Figure 1 (tube, protein in one colour):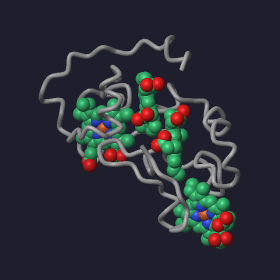
Figure 2 (cartoon, protein in one colour; figure 1 turned 90 degrees about the horizontal axis):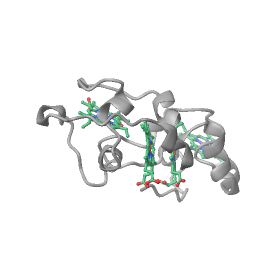
Figure 3 (tube, protein in one colour; figure 1 turned 30 degrees about the vertical axis):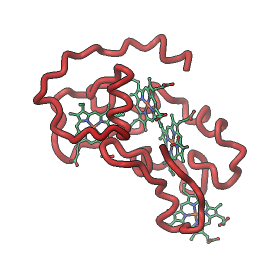
Length: 117
Ligand code: HEC
Ligand code: HEC
Ligand code: HEC
Ligand code: HEC
């Protein structure tokens, strides 16, 4: 992830009151916070309100462009989680911020094997 080096990650002093959302150890948010990624980097604000949401562009600032992700999983063909018949969908439909991630594909394709970290 060489690209990340060029990104200035805002080192925030996180007040306890910032943790309004539960952070389980396996959460995407917790994984990110452990790597120095702040609430702001995903949410665009430190005062995240209930019902908050993360735009794909936020994620893609660090993990994009989307084509890079598509190529990484190209071997999966039409079962590529990042390139399929649904087009570009919300990252968080699969990569949940504060609860265990689960592939959205499985809602319709019960027989797919698509584990998520
Ligand atoms: C890796 C990106 C990421 C980071 C870092 C992150 N979040 Fe989130 N957050 C999400 C996503 C994605 C959602 C959308 C709901 C979901 O998928 O869990 C969300 C949703 C939320 C919500 C709304 C939850 C609801 O059910 O209404 C709150 C509040 C929130 N985050 C607070 C925070 C706080 C506070 C921090 C910093 C301690 C933080 N988040 C860090 C990705 C992140
Ligand atoms: C400010 C940059 C930044 C933002 C914004 C960001 N990430 Fe990350 N992400 C990282 C870093 C850094 C890592 C850890 C990379 C590593 O260890 O190689 C990571 C790791 C990951 C991983 C691998 C997790 C694991 O357990 O191995 C996934 C999946 C991921 N991010 C998805 C997302 C999604 C989805 C969003 C938006 C909701 C997002 N990221 C937002 C920087 C970011
Ligand atoms: C249909 C479900 C799905 C969607 C939508 C999705 N992903 Fe993924 N993503 C996966 C799966 C499955 C993996 C592989 C298992 C894992 O890492 O959890 C993965 C892996 C990743 C990884 C780790 C890559 C690596 O090198 O191991 C990153 C980063 C990532 N996704 C980012 C994103 C971003 C950013 C978006 C939105 C533009 C997104 N994903 C949308 C299912 C999805
Ligand atoms: C809202 C329901 C729905 C979701 C969610 C969904 N699909 Fe599908 N998918 C379908 C339907 C309907 C078909 C066409 C009928 C069939 O062949 O099963 C299809 C067909 C397919 C096929 C070709 C047939 C097969 O089973 O090999 C693939 C591959 C596929 N989808 C991949 C995905 C992937 C990857 C995701 C997640 C990113 C996904 N689908 C999410 C409904 C869905």
